[in-house]
Length: 221
DNA sequence: GCGACAG
DNA sequence: ATCTTGTCGC
Image (cartoon, rainbow, N blue to C red; front, side):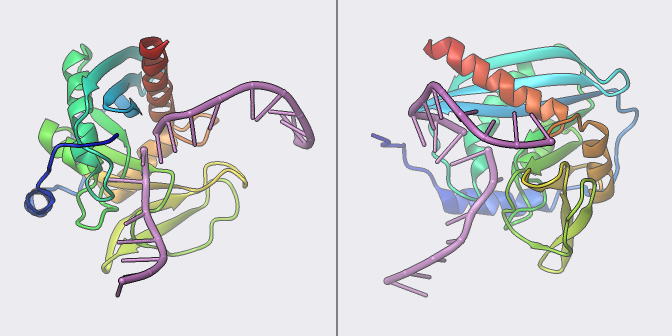
């Protein structure tokens, strides 16, 4: 029962290629005080977003935003941002705190056209951003990650796109960190480590995942 | 044509 | 991502 409206993926691909040229993959920000994690949950064509604003100094949540929007784009590898950004944008508008950094549950530079959802959001909202995924989308991992804390570079088309990072011991899987916009690969990794609690994903994203799920459960009953 | 494929 | 409870183990 999908029947999604028609979408011009070719035009979207071209837009991604154009946007990639505007990316700033180097540190370009002032004081980083508040970081926001984002994630979405779905039920058919209803999308639920969770945005958790995290105080980097105090290491605590200062605001949680939950939104619901209509979704009319299916999941198509390579085009996740067109499905999720409308939800992220709604949550972003609803947030009151001045966010300095956005952390997304999705790829950044680790994308076929170097424009994952973290890059897309960073460019559209003009905010430094980072992407974190639980599975490798594209690229080759240059090393073996055996113990907690181990890191290995990920390259794609001869370019460093981010890092593979082992947050916990196996069987917890490795996560992949890549810069979105206005952040270098090295700093993206450092910020993920800095916001890493005792779980698999950095706290802002993990909590955003829970907030999105809670919003969905509350709406569905 | 076949397989791969973030969330 | 989503469909879904209890259960084994540190």
